[in-house]
Image 1 (cartoon, rainbow, N blue to C red):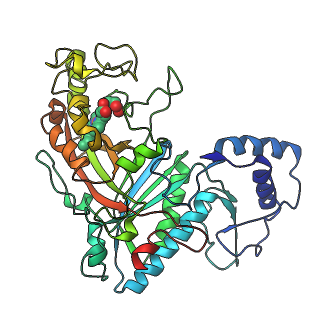
Image 2 (cartoon, rainbow, N blue to C red; image 1 turned 30 degrees about the vertical axis):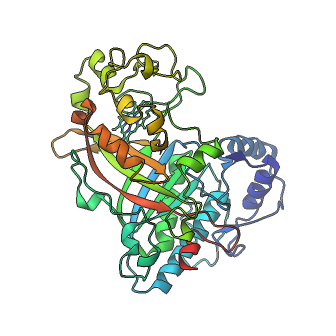
Image 3 (cartoon, rainbow, N blue to C red; image 1 turned 30 degrees about the horizontal axis):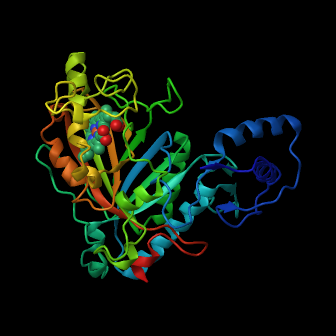
Amino acid sequence: MKPIDRRQFLGRSAAVLGAGAIGLGVGAEVASGATNAAPDSAETAELALADELAAHSDFEGYHQAGILTPRQANAAFVALDAIVPTQGELVEGLKELSYRAAGLTQGGAVAEIEIDDPPPDSGLLGGYNAPDGLTVTIAFGSTLFDSRYGLAAARPAGLTAMPAFEKDGLEPDRCHGDVMLSICADHRDTVVHTMRELLRTTAGVLTPRWRVDGFQSAKRGPTPHSSTRNLFGFRDGTANPDPTDAKLMDQLVWVKPGAGDPRWTAGGTYQVVRTIRMHVEFWDRVGMFEQTNMIGRDRVTGAPLGGAHEFEDPRYDLDPKGKRIPLSAHIRLANPRTPETEDQRILRRPYNYDRGLDEAGNLDQGLLFVAFNQDIARQFETVQKRLEEEEMADYITPVGGGYYFAPRAAAGPGDWVGSGLFA
Ligand code: HEM
């Protein structure tokens, strides 16, 4: 993400300030040049806004944003089903989805057309849709490749419906979906606005199936690099593969041409989403020693047991019998760190969720586990099956989610996410 130029932001904002009259714009976001200089006090306020809301990620390029992008604070994951009868109508809907998402992620002034028409934007963010670090990642579920749209032959080789694993308690209306939208931004209102705009854009073509909202805990140090915590109180994200290592991402995340998948899948990745309920009332009754042994890390520092620093190597080679870090610890089963398991690593991008109370008055909290990988069978499923042996499994229940394929990004203006599938 990069901050946009402050003067550019001020220019756009000043244009918005001067464009209160009806009938100026034509689209939902309009490019603009500065007309009136903002008064000093407004300028000061705009500068503060520019700092807080100005981060943006490119929507166009080779890989979609929202995969390697550092996690923003807020998210919504929305699964949708296609309801149109023909491929042509589906294509039109996906194009509109992509164009609107592109506009929202880049930011722009909100236009108004006619006073009697519904405004082209809900206006939740005011007169200027600041980018606010927004990413919209679009992915397709295996059902999109059934018999309805003639896409069966184009199905990515590794894309199946997410199976129920041994300890899952999957609820059918919280699983799968033809399209998955991962909407992530620095602030909650941007996520809500984006979701509303995208659902409005695709109404009549895609209908919502399920949705889960997520949040990141605040960064509380001790260093700027310290990982934030999940709802069991442990740091989450410590041992993720480095997303800035392009060679590693080519080995673990991106689908390569000629790897058994159809050609349109090149540059894309498989996305796994799992809504995992965490039984926090039970967890909070477990002794600290047992909690840390289940995870394999110190709860406060995040260091591997026996270590002092969050990012140090757990050195399983020096602890073959699991005296320091039990063999059943989550981190040890998830990644045994042997040469044989190197290519099974996944890129995690999880969020916490908090959905109020269940019918019995228990907290409905958990982890929205999101991971990207090149090959679901080789990576996610292998790890998931190893984790069936972990003790933490008694304190969590996966209740929903799905497998999806996130294709390469829109290449440039006019292109859209998924165009290769229909080429
Ligand atoms: C509610 C469920 C889960 C909780 C509370 C949880 C918690 C954690 C914690 C605290 C860590 C250590 C810090 C870190 O490296 O990020 C971790 C690491 C990890 N988790 Fe999970 N996790 C959950 C589910 C899963 C699932 C479903 C998978 C994959 C199938 C998974 C795979 C991993 C991996 C690969 C690591 C890194 C291990 C390493 O490289 O050392 N986790 N998890």
